[in-house]
Image 1 (cartoon, rainbow, N blue to C red):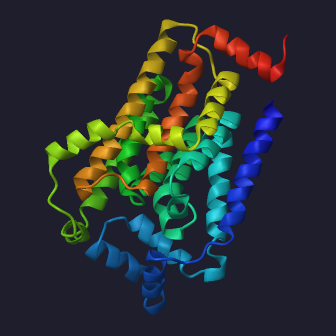
Image 2: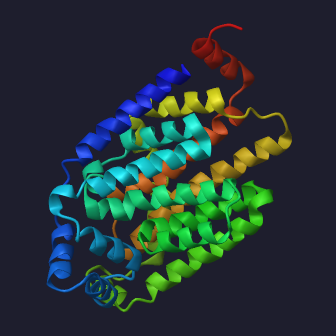
Image 3: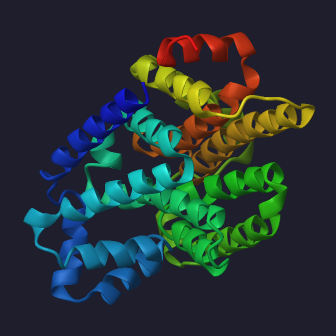
Length: 329
């Protein structure tokens, strides 16, 4: 079963990589390329900072990528997907790969969150780098590395900069042994958010949307918190079943009250991640979260569910899944 799941994951990831070879510049890519070709990467960063957003990390990478010929536009995205997959494996092995594949199978509008260079920098790359940051924590690398990574992530994506703060808060509660590192990462994530919000271009951008309404934003977030997972269940139920199976096969079963408490923390964290993402998006745009942004809360949600599945489900479920997967022992 382990080999079969690995083969399935690798086939699906290869499928996405093949599609990425066909990527060409589109929409924002063309505008970014025009600025870079007529001036420089620094000019693109300045343009975004002064007239649209403080996401200087996105502007930097978008500018650098526009120096690569358009026929090769998909190569950096293939490398990003490989980095994402490798980090998922390093963090949680089979469970990590299954969560990634399930996310790509269930996320809506991959053509704008993965198969589009500008979209991938905003929606997929932040997730890949966040997993890399967690791997550096797990392996005990110097604390400055994950701090710099989450700081950079905040300058890539408005959606991720909010969600990673909630996710890091959950991890701080979940893993006492790493609290010092996660506290530093939290501070770095908040600093990144502040840097982005200080950009003068934010005021010009907000002029394109109705004035923010906190009451309506809270109401929308409360009603929409479960829509990302519900949509994923509707689009790719088998992918989510595979997440559950992976959790039961390779996760740690609850043996103490502390394990149950950790499961509760994760479930509350999942709710908080989805609520915060919806709230931030509606407050900024006075509209619901667009489909391409859903890949961010979906990945975090599936990772959390995979972690808690073996803790929440009774022992007979573990026995049944292991008998089917491995045969009677």
